[in-house]
Length: 640
Image (cartoon, rainbow, N blue to C red; front, side, top):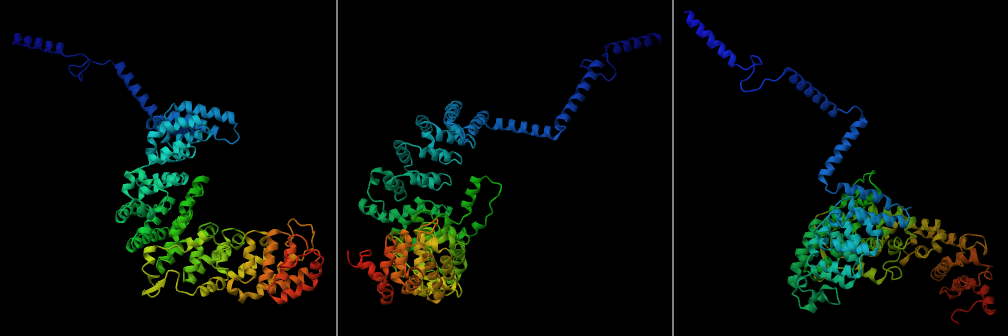
């Protein structure tokens, strides 16, 4: 037993000797760690956790801002490969675009910017910041440097023309391009005009090129929208006429194929609402010259729907905190499509077609879309003609008075002195007068679609109140004289116009444009339409006579109305055309004072009394003026 016990103890000791040192929890196969190192690791881990917490929670607001700024910078550097270059260029840009910087310093900044760019124009052109720097450099750099940039970007122009920020750089390069460079760019657009016009950004480049282009270059851009044959063969575009009918006749094209191709080009533009560009206006008008009645009507309906769709756009609020350029752009985009179209004659013609060939309901929506923009339209060269068209056609005078005439009344002081603003007023006083409207203006107002008018002078309309079909003339059903009376007298415009002329009598007589307004008001308009307001017109006569009664040589800032070129001729016309005015003027201003006014421009005023067809007017002045004729101071009318 003792021997067996000793054996068991020896085996136990062997097992204990084979166990690894370091405690009962030591895992086999691993080296035991010293207690000091374990404690050091725990301390370092705790220290790391504390540092991490401190980084997450900056002590102050300033430190938090700095940390956020550093994080933003790191993200931008990862996202933009040329971020550091853009920052350097932005600093140079702030220096070179200052107004007070000298030309020498600006030239140095531009050269430094080009050196930093290192020929990376394509990468820079697509960036929001650096593209602006490159635009400023092109504005102030030498022609040699401009050519260098143009040549570097030449292969990429069509790509850049579709980019949001690069498109402005392309426009800038085109503005400063040489004749040869511009011709190359126009030729590079061959086959791309229609696709670029459908692009929201690229359309602006085509429009810009169209404005800069000459006659033959404009034709080359337009004919691509007419036919595929004209795209395939450039030589076919070398013709003298830009009218589509002439091109079809000269080249022997099939009208049906041209019409089909133009439909494919114009339809997407109408669907996207890209109809406020000059080149699109011209293409649509040419399309309407060859289109049948159904196709022409469809296009006009789509145009009207686009105008109606922008009715509420003028209610869009512009953010007050925007920069001035962005604010102006936002205001322009917030304007109705009808207002944005009024920048050329073709846009005017399209608007006239929408008014003429639209139903009563369409016309109502078009007029409502003008609310708040009547003054702007009236002061515009083509917008004023659109207002004339509406005043001459639309039978719903209650709506016109409510929307248009009320805004015109508020702006009378500005309109009577303006070259364009006076025209809607003169149209009501003397319709379609060649003195105030040129042949082109009258042709634009009377523009119609041939295929629709050829079916008859009358168009089917739907009455808004009854919903029943009715026939209405393109020029309106209402008698023109009745329409004029309702617009001029019932709206109160006539009374307001007389009061405005009376209050501003001196300024209007001396003005090249205002004198025509005061003349038409003073004679009562064509057909004496202002006859019901004769008492107020007589007050205007007295105001003119009182101004003319001011003694000659009185120290005033302005010329006397008898000696001024414009006012003397206006008063002379009034004497010839209005015996009542001649009587008031003679009694208040001239009787007993003819010797003073026998020389210069005022002599024409005196002779007008003798040239008048009214016997009473001639008798007023004959006795007093006879001695001036006898002495040779005045020349007898009818004798040289």
